[in-house]
Image 1: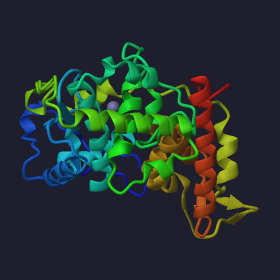
Image 2: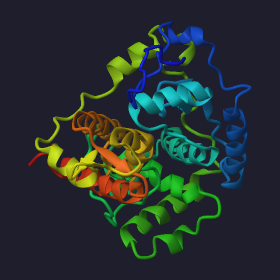
Image 3: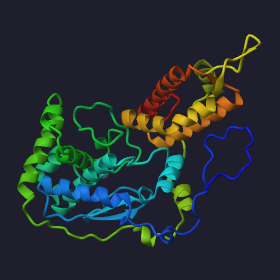
Image 4: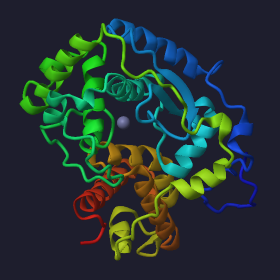
Length: 347
Ligand SMILES: [Zn+2]
């Protein structure tokens, strides 16, 4: 799926591979026979070790991670079933949710929190509502987290527990069931988060031996039934990029270098756009992890910054890349935090 345009020496750092046009159900994607199957087998062992033997989750491929409400079915993003699709997702969305087996296990522990919540209808318990809040609270996609809030555990990137009571529980549960993690020591200095973990520990001791109330495993948006193509999926599912701040050029000139200085060409150098593009995926992920700013937004911002750098002819001298990337990271993180606080990059 190579890009077909004839670029010559021009840099097209964000060139995208052409995504599939066929209905997704025709792609033949399945868990069996892929590395995902081995990760799920590993997860089953973790469940047994955590004493969770009565609830039997069903795993399937869909468009994103999730558990349909009032089921025990765990949806896994389709792109984790094929390396080329994961690469495509990184290009389009800025971040793959499950870069490694270890990271997929983190997502599985989180989703299992939802499964246990629905299976035992924990959200109806008074102690659950008192600690996590009511399930009826609105589910806000563009939540605005408060980094380092001591009221919440930290597990998935983006301070995800702060999104909704159901996510708060799922994150708490995931921390609780992480093998080898001494969560009491880890959260000693965060008594409110620790209290949620202690409650989770008590609830799990209480229900783990019981048959679940809910065992429905009906699949929602199973990959084998999706009529739209991957291209349709990305066209319709990614949020519109936020309005970009004015006056970026001055900042970019401070971070990168002009190709000619005092009439002398810069020493050996790479186009700034190529340096940005090479780290766009890692940057989008780190910014999301520590600020909660969505990776697809950072990715769009970096794409714009790379385009501006090309228009300005900016370069990055060899030997100066680490400094330039550090500055770029802090610069982008500052924009991201402004967005998290105000809902926009510009005040
Ligand atoms: Zn969740």
